[in-house]
Structures are given as C-alpha cells and as structure tokens.
Image (cartoon, rainbow, N blue to C red; front, side, top):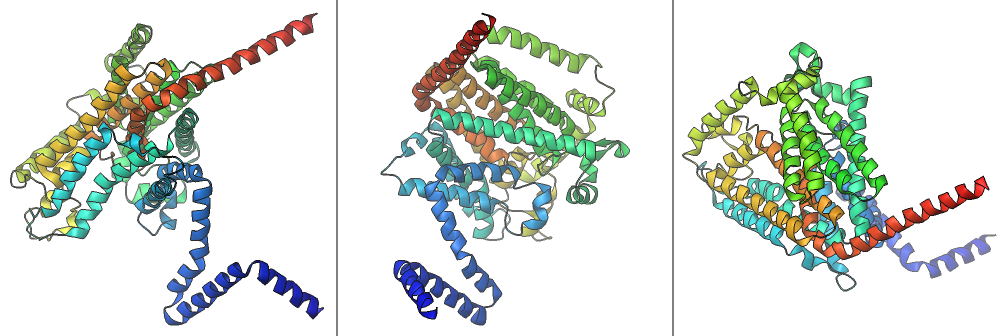
Amino acid sequence: MSKVYSNRLTEYTHENGGRVALLFLLFALAIYEFIHAGFNAFAVICLSPLAILFCYVAFRWKMTVFWALIVVNWFIMNRNFEDYISFPKSLPEELLELTLIAIAIIDIRKETYFERAWNFMLLAVMVWLGFCIIEIFNDSCGLGMNVNTWFTGFRLMALHLVWIILVFSLYISNPQRLLLYLRVWAGLSLLSAFWTWKMKTYGFTDTEHNWIWNSAYQTHILNGGTLIRYFSTFNDAATYGCNASASAVAFLIFGITSKLKIDKIFFFITAVAVIWGMFQSGTRTAIITLIAGFIVFLFLARSTKILIPSAIIGGFFIFILIFTNIGNSSQQMRRMRSAFKKSDASATVRDINKVAIAKYMKEAPWGIGLGMMSYDIPANNKFKKLSEIPPDSEYVFIWVRTGPVGVTVFTCCMVMMLLGGCVIVLFRLKSPSLVGIGGGLCAAFVSIHLGAYANQILFQYPNGITFFGGMAIVYLLPYIEPEWIKYEEKRLAKIEERKRLRLEKKLASRV
C-alpha cells in the first residue's frame, strides 16, 4: 500500500514538480517570516497566491476587471462598508485602473486603442495636471515643501483623471461594450433608488443609523426630525442627489433618442426611479442641475421633433415647480422649491463663507497648497482659519487649495472638455441614437459640475469615474459609430423578424 502511495506521489511530483516546489518554498518562507517578522509578514506571504490568481483572472478575463472597477467605484463610499475597510478608499479603484492599463500595455501587440486616448479631453487634463505639478512649489503657508500632502491632492484631483480617460479609451471599444456600460450604470442607479426606498420604508441599517445620528444629524435630519435627507448607497445626501440628477438627465435623453422600444422603456423607467430618489435626497441644487442638463441636450439635439415637445413638457414642469404650490404637502417638495428662493438661509451662509474666504485669498493667489487640510496647518498659522471654513462647494475647495489662478485653470480645462464633446455631438456624429448618447453624457457632465458649484461632490465616489468616464466616451463615439450603425440595424432586424414570426404564428392559429 505504501509503495503504491509512494509511486503516486512520485508520479504527481514528476508531472507537477514546479508547482510543488513553488508551494513548498512559499510555505517555508511563510514560516520563516512568521518566526522572524511576525504575523503581518506571514499573512502577506500566505495571501500571495491570491495575487497570482488575480493576475491570471485579470489577463484571462480583462473585461471582468473593468466591470469590477465600475461596481467597486459605485459602492466604495457606502456607509455600510466603513467598518470593514481599514485602507484608503481610493486604493481598490486605483489598483484596478492601473491593472487595466498594465494589461493593455502588455497586450499592445494584439490590440491597442491607445491612439483613441490622444484627444482634446486628455489635452485639457494635461494642462490641469501640469498646473498641479507646479503647485508642489507652493509655500503660501510658510511650512516648506510637503511632498506627501501635495501628492495626495495631486493623485486624487489630477492623476486620477488621466487614469479614467485611459481606461475608458482602452476598454469601451465597440457598440456592445458601450451599450452594456450604459445598462450597468442604469442598473446601479436603480439599485441606489431601491435602497432609498428601503431606507424610507424599513429604516436604516445599524451602521447608517449610527452615522446619521452621531455625525450627520445637522445636515440630514431637518425640521425637528420630521424631514430626513436620504443618502442611499452614497456617503451623503448631497453626493447622492447630484449624482441622481445628472444620471437622470442622461437616462431621459437615452430613452428619448433610442430607436429600440425595449431600450426606451428601460431608460425611461430608470430615469423616473432615479428622479424619485433625487427628491428623497433633499438636495436642492439637484433640481436646478436636472433642468440645466436637459437644456444643454435641447441645444445639442438638432431635432425640432425632440426640441418642441421636450421644451413644452420641461417648461410646464418648471412652471409648476416655481409658480404653483402643487405637491407642497410633501416636505421634500417644499425643500426642493426653496432652491429657487434667493433669500434661502443656507445660500446666505454660503455667501458669507465665500466673502470670508476671499479676504484670505488676497494673500494666497496660488492657494494654501494642493492637498493641504486643517490638520496640516499649525494653530498659529494665519491660514489655519481659512482651512477650517466649510467650502460647501468643490469649486470653492479648489479655489482655497490652488487660489484664483488654480480655480481659473481648472474651470477653463473643464470648459475645454465640454466644448470638445459638444463639437463631436454637433458635427461629427450622424446616428441619431448615438447623438443622443453623446448629448446625454455631455448634459450629465454639465449637471454634475453645476452640482459641484454648490456642493463638494465632484471628486467624491462614484462621481469621478461616472461623469469624467462618460465624457471620455463622448470622444470615443466617432470611432465606434460605423460599428454602432451596423449593430443597431442588426438589432432592429432581429426585432422585426420576431414580429413577423409572431404574426405568422397568430395568422396560422386562426386558420
């Protein structure tokens, strides 16, 4: 018996000698590290096979990594995961992005779409990235060069945009992936709307309850506790509301311009659900961004058939919202209407904060430094107070960190991106449905930036990838359009064939 077992072991070792040797060496190394370096080093060695498995899966099914990136990006700031995440929340997303870029570089001989990334949007990002590099020499606070603090801000506010453009340019390469991406985005938005309904109907989880009552009750529990601002799967209600507003604009437009009935129905249902969720967030800016985004699309639509009915319906909706009291029995509706009141107390506080910030900024034309937070500045420093004033807006946050010079450069770069995308939609695309996709993504880009003018939400997850990635797709549409037209015609032909077969079957059943 022992001889048979020995022969089998010898045969297995002969066939799999390399694997056996590698596992033995890893086991020996793990024991050595446990004895000499402790449990952390032991754990790292034991988990190394998982890293090898991840690399194998990534190269074998690279689109799986892309979809994982989209899903991780959507849920990484979910309050329910806070207790389980002990590492920087940007780390999983950045690792997935860099993995996808590395795979594309390794596979460059098989297929490459790097040339698609060299566009006007990347140029605009490079201008902003160049300015952020110069910011390393900014010493307005008189504390010397702080490379670690600078790199944190540089990575999240500039370098990350480069990764987004590259990833989308490399992997949204054909009509099937484009349509699937839009559906995944819609599916995630529907899930967030469902979670809002769950919060409203069945209440919060323990983690959500602890956060809202211990940290966020002043901004999320209003009117003596009778009005709750729901934040769904996001980190707060402002991020959720602005995301829902911009996403709803896109889905409405996709539904209007799609040639296929099934797509129209899906995107319209998604838009309605997402708009409902937007109202539950109580984010007043969201209603303005929703309207503004749709106006942008009407400019890009190039179709009186879309322009006239959409303008009439949209104008009627705005009239009801501003000039009537319809729906005022709902506290959420009354809060949304307050966005149109110039005397709103919240807006007044923000204006007061901006005046206070402006006084400090006269002495810091380049800002207090990229990545600088209040804990990086000593109490006796004159800019300590500036770092503690709530910015209430992504643009004010950028203004404080990079000064009037920086916020001007940033704004110009964003306008460059938008204008480049609008030119593509207006003059380079012929397919009406693709014009709708491009116009919807441009409109969503405008919406999220208007939201960022009033709330600090632009670089919050999942908005970065969702809307900068969406704009990157606009620049890819001219490459995809020839295949898209064929793909769309093929889908329409299949639907017509199914209709014909059903009709024949129906007629045959009557005979």
